[in-house]
Image (cartoon, helix red, strand yellow):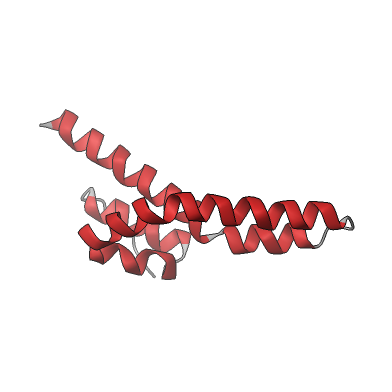
Length: 95
């Protein structure tokens, strides 16, 4: 039973990290957009669009199967950590 919990936790953490990567691409594009070379900006946008095109199908399928995941991008990293800890039965004081 414990092994199942560990693999589930690992899966949840991987999913959160992947969603963070996908939803933070606009920040990456903005940061790279501050570069002085036009070719770097163009390549960053093209690479981000290609990555989003290839990953959007699997991500939308996952979100359709797990609709509660829609709230995660709106949460801060500390809120996400608190949710994971609560799921593991650990209490984090919020005061």
